[in-house]
Length: 237
Ligand code: ADP
Ligand code: MG
Image (cartoon, rainbow, N blue to C red):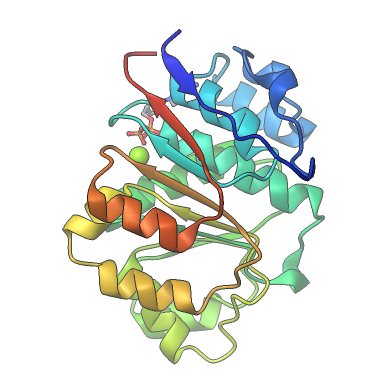
């Protein structure tokens, strides 16, 4: 067993039960929409990696996730699949606005996440946007951002939109993903993240992934999550 799973007990019994899916090895064994199953199949994803096996059963139940696994272990699908499934189950549509925000430390990583989202989310009718600045100016982004359902952003650009863009409304946010949280903090974005978190609804699912579990990552986790599942993968999948 390479994945260490430490499930949390729930006194109120209100947590959805991930146990039937703990131990699943293939994506087809998970309770995913046909649209997601088709996207995964066409992208030739069949067997889950270790971090995906460890986290997906919990993340799909709506739990907050604190995931630790090294680069290249497949963390992107570990959060993209729950994001897509959550919005799909809620029948999220154009009128519902921003349902998920994914924060990534760099433009390049954000673009990779967006490419993966397009691949596995291909058969869904959810809309997605990249808010990373660069060639397209912030003014162009401001015109297109309204009505997008899933945003993949760098921290500075997201906060800029929150502060400057009229009608930029995250009040219905269902899922927040902090990818490569250790790197986000290393790059000096702690203050930006705090300002972002202060503007987001507390009634949401949060997934935080990080290659290392530093003190500052733990502080961020305390600030952004409630009763998270801690899932660590220590070896190759
Ligand atoms: P990380 O974010 O942990 O660094 P990525 O999510 O970028 O890792 O995935 C690394 C590579 O592994 C990507 O090329 C991705 O397409 C591939 N990959 C991810 N999950 C699977 C899977 N279940 N089966 C096969 N390849 C996968
Ligand atoms: Mg990654």
